[in-house]
Image (tube, rainbow, N blue to C red):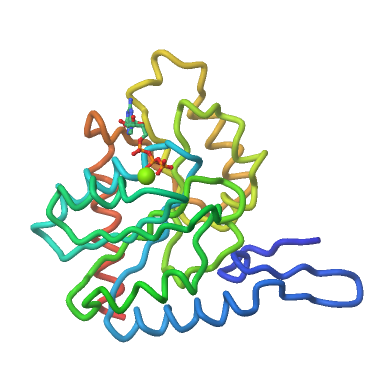
Length: 233
Ligand SMILES: Nc1nc2c(ncn2[C@@H]2O[C@H](COP(=O)(O)OP(=O)(O)OP(=O)(O)O)[C@@H](O)[C@H]2O)c(=O)[nH]1
Ligand SMILES: [Mg+2]
């Protein structure tokens, strides 16, 4: 099996010697519908992925605090159970809806598509999807996003990009999160960056701490630039 670096890398194509089997054709069909919807409203769609507990919701809260006066932002968040993350994000004053997957370990395009009518897309500049915390399955599901951003927390160990390569291969940005804990952990920013770039040499990398507000302005500037590009496209 070979994986090519392109948006199609998020798609479930398995190449054998004599055939090409698209295991996720239905998902990819709906992902294209979502992509078209976003193009019509000029909404930037970002898929946030990571292992469980790497700081996705905390980053959504911090990003909302920083950007909500500059643009209209909303979030949809997937979890196996509970509405806790959506409640946390709503406390910042932005729209956030919870997708409860009932045990499924990733979001699929049809789940996102079902929730889209709840958002007034024509008024939303930036829509985040906080995926289920998992470095494996979410890598294979195209959700129609413009960019995929993967958090890699200092608490997880710096060996993850080579162990879970598809997630890093299909991502556009790696955020090394919880950087405030670096002094206490055997984690090398240099080593994790080197491994991640060997998996995907086009990956952008930022180091952040949502808790201590480090690197968050650079992250927000990246988002603002991408929103601008989308609106001028
Ligand atoms: N030290 C430190 N802790 C953080 C930081 N960001 C988040 N945390 C903590 O990490 C834990 C998990 O954070 P969440 O934001 O809930 O992580 P998550 O990725 O949304 O978790 P799931 O949705 O369950 O996958 C919480 O206790 C946060 O307070 C950070 O920048 N530094
Ligand atoms: Mg969360």
